[in-house]
Length: 114
Image (cartoon, rainbow, N blue to C red; front, top):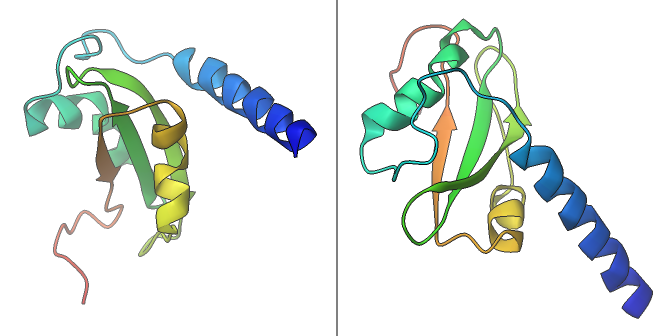
């Protein structure tokens, strides 16, 4: 059990390092509290150019600042599927106080599916 926990910690540390080093485009609201949906849109507006649906979870701290984000699912042109455990795994490990889910519609039609 102890060896297994050690491996989990290594993985989480690696995930933390990997996610924290991700570059974002200039002018994005990283480091500011995420209090407005327009901030999220600005940060991930490049998703509109993707050919497949992506589901991204953003982990926020107590002040609503971004701790990290992770692409949790890449789907097809019409759908992306993820289990709840996949969505909350990294935010819980990073001690997030809140999350924001982001996903795109490559078709350009934002109408919810049935």
